[in-house]
Image (cartoon, rainbow, N blue to C red):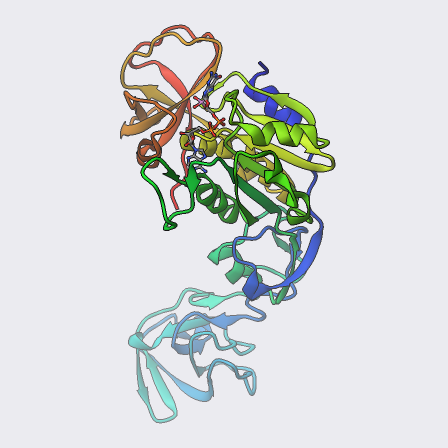
Length: 400
Ligand SMILES: Nc1nc2c(c(=O)[nH]1)N[C@H]1C(S)=C(S)[C@@H](COP(=O)(O)OP(=O)(O)OC[C@H]3O[C@@H](n4cnc5c(N)ncnc54)[C@H](O)[C@@H]3O)O[C@H]1N2
Ligand code: MOO
């Protein structure tokens, strides 16, 4: 059995970033920039007021109270009609351009207005309440880098940079096929001896959250003809994922059917728990990742293998989970030759990182504990027994 790291490396070398496409900003949420994004605008484009008040020369208000002549009014969206001379003030509003000659703004609470005049009650430091041109960013500056995922902040920034269309990575299309006579979709008629398919819906959510498109190919029965038309239905996809039928049972026919129809197998079975019967190959060009049927195995393999594939397809490394260090709350026994991913809870924060408590039952059918878990503790193959208080590596499980 190959190691988790070798399996990851062998899988990833089969993928390259998807091509770029031009997309309107309002459809960009959750997607990934294909190129660095330069601003088309200087922000603010000129010196503007940060407050409602009066634009003045600081040198005119060194001694207060002092009365200045109000020679103009400048609302946001207008341009100053003239320059400000000594002894003058301009009525100004938040976001409006500061007239040439003025260097500071006094907020209106610190003034007393009269007709054509204003009495300034507080001194102003030079530059007070003036946002200088380019305070936020300048035209031509790269403020968002290729590989950035776009959320609310990024979309707001791109809009402020006056970029209504963005070069984005094409969303990876991932085909999903559940297998097994015993599985039915949630809500479908179900017999007592059947189970509800959770794997495909969970994996589809993982794919969509990472910025891909999940293409649901339904459930294949454990029959030799189950793969008829499958290749057509997966056309245009970057990857086909199957769940179930990965083990050695005589009803696990889908993998063997794939193997008989041009699948070139790269590997099958890895030194990992849960997830041992992971399979990877090409069919004949389409990469196929065969995940175990057990719901926890399937989703843990999604975190460990599918997310790095999505990261590579999208050129966005932060889509993959990265290892962190925490402390064990209790002893752990030595490990065998499979790399373990143990569902665990954060019990209390600690100066050196979180403290983790492992769930007693780690059965790979127990999806409720996976949902409840904060993290997966990684136990290396043949790891010696560990004591409470020792450090451990873990993957933080993403919350929506
Ligand atoms: N003799 C051996 N038996 C098993 C081995 C082994 O090495 N030797 N490996 C075990 C391990 S580890 C795993 S993991 C499972 C994987 O089995 P399969 O990938 O063949 O999956 P199935 O047999 O089809 O199903 C296993 C389990 O998962 C449930 N399942 C299947 N599909 C779904 C779905 N879409 N949603 C939710 N749950 C699903 C299925 O009902 C079974 O309970 O094999 C062990 N056996
Ligand atoms: O390795 Mo299996 O994935 O334990 O349940």
